[in-house]
Image (cartoon, rainbow, N blue to C red; front, side):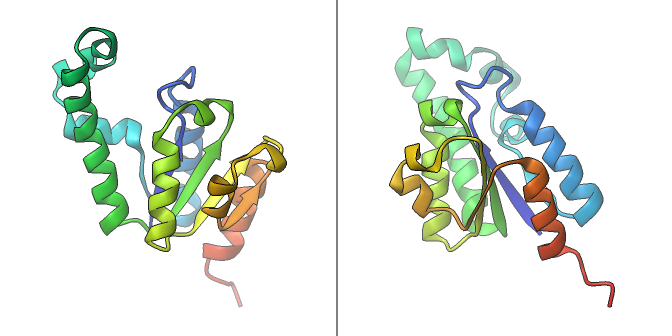
Length: 157
C-alpha cells in the first residue's frame, strides 16, 4: 500500500515536516505502508540548485518559478494517477492558504482514492468542495491511527 501525504507546505511554518514524519513512521512501522511525501519527493524532481532558489523566484522571476513548480506538480500528479492507494490530508489554516492540497483532493476524488482527513477546523467552516472530496474526517492523528489499524491490519482471528 502507498499513501499520499497531502497538506500545507508553502505556508506551513515547518513545511508540514513534523506531521508527515510522524505519520510516515507510524504507517511504515505499524502497517507496512509506504508514503509519497512531497517534501522528500522534491529531491527526485529538482536539482539542488532549483531546490535552493525556487521559492525566491516567486518574486523575482515568475516564469522560472512556474517552470520549476510545474516539475513538482507533474511528479505529484503522476504518483496520484499511478501508485496511490489512499490519501491522508492534514487540513489546517495553512492548507486553506495554499492551492496544492485542493488540487490533490480533487484528483483523489476523480480517481476514487479514499481520503482520510485530519482537521481541528470546524467542519462548518471548511469548503463544501473540500469536504466532498473526503472519505472520513478525524479530529486527531491518534483517532486516524486507530481507524487505520482497524482498517488495514490483518485480523488476528
